Length: 100
Picture 1: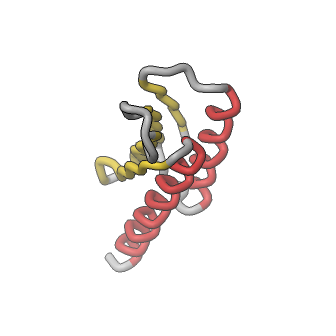
Picture 2: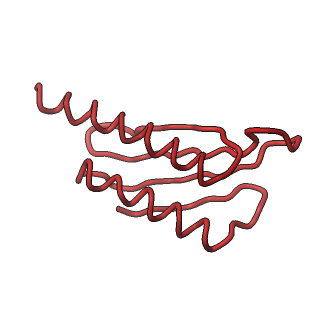
């Protein structure tokens, strides 16, 4: 799976990029047909609670993509929430394929 991390309006720390790659690459264990993953990290203004946003877009065969967007106080938490949401979507998609 090809993982692309995009940070909007800030330069991400290498530890954050490594964390994102590690978390998103685990999705391969739930569904082996993932083509690519685009991760967008944003900081919302003004500086308030839940101002970190993580968006994950997963490309899979025979369907355009799966998408999750989550807000949290830290990027790590937002990425965790978004990965969990995509994991649930992959589970539903996998179940749908079995029932065909």
